[in-house]
Image (cartoon, rainbow, N blue to C red; front, side, top):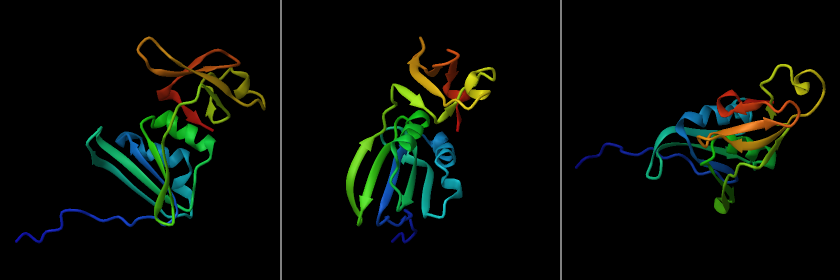
Length: 155
């Protein structure tokens, strides 16, 4: 009989949110942009976990926290395949996929150093567009420069 442990068990959270189906390469970025690297709440995360749908994935569990729409927009920009699962008293109360909104305000910095948003106290506004290769870009409302996903800097 083989008594070697073949699975690790991670505790379920009583209340909070699970972010599932995060692209494995984006887990640490999601932790950072949500400020979960400096929180006092319990945070569990896994990277390069098996996924039947995507090959590998990441997962983040945060106790006693439910994400606001601004935070969900941040998740959508870096992990568009993510699923949010809200847990209350160990029961799943809501499960939704994230969606990239058409407009992004106040969460991303314009990459153009000459943009008014980088020189004066003006909030950022972007329209989400896709280029000819279907790559996501943010078109700045003020300077009309396009910021690619690789150049996103979160405020």
